[in-house]
Length: 142
Image (cartoon, rainbow, N blue to C red; front, side, top):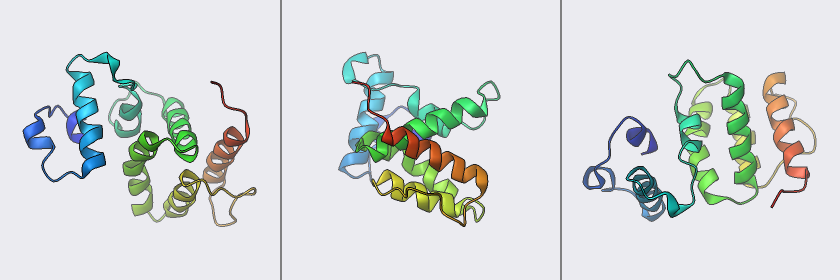
């Protein structure tokens, strides 16, 4: 749904039918923000980082940092972060090269993260998981 909004759709009559209660609430909050209501407590650019793969001006490092931040927040119980992370995890799961990473991230976002990297992970993927684990073990800024 967020991808459709990102591509310019804004009509709730076409966006909301068929969504479950949580998806509809997220969609309504995004639409409210885009309509000029900044008081709903979301960062409008957070989801763009996860869904926008066509903008050459973003660095891969920025996208990776945003992805790691979303994964950390999801693991800490943030339902919005978990929801935003879902499409990215689905894309990773569909690719055999990143399927093991997707499974590990899914477990991590549910709060189950191993103390050591999984042996079947690519070293770069293991580094992403290690950064998430490290972030989760540090005290939160309030």
